[in-house]
Image 1 (cartoon, rainbow, N blue to C red):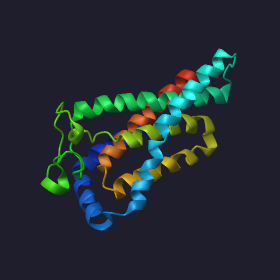
Image 2: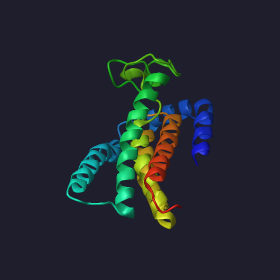
Image 3: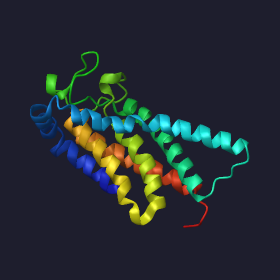
Image 4: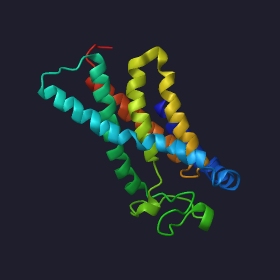
Length: 199
């Protein structure tokens, strides 16, 4: 799945990103429902912080996490690790956004700008990878690995956020796929570190 996301992101860069962003701007611009879908991801980081703080306080009072407690910790940790890594990648990649939304940043829709400008810095060059996708995919991956047969349920929030990001023209498709790949890797890594049943 991780490799598939990375390969799709590479293909999307050359084939899908510009036509999809142009279509989204022309056909869906101003539809507030898509913006609301992106907000699903915005609640995840504060919940992860609260979850880790709660687990730490509970541990001070003698709580020892069982299997589901470790899943909770893995999901919270994956969220925060993913969020930290994506910030460094955004700076390193320096990708412009599909739309202009901060400080008159250059964009595809306004200026026809498309590409990566490594280590440029600034909010106008921080599109890749999608942070929203990373912070929803990371904990959902840890949870999906624990749920096994019901793992598909964890894909629903990720899909909703991705649809919102495309519909609102907030991100390129390749940003979203790269964010999903990062979230998958971090979620899988945190779950693997915290499980104890040898599976």
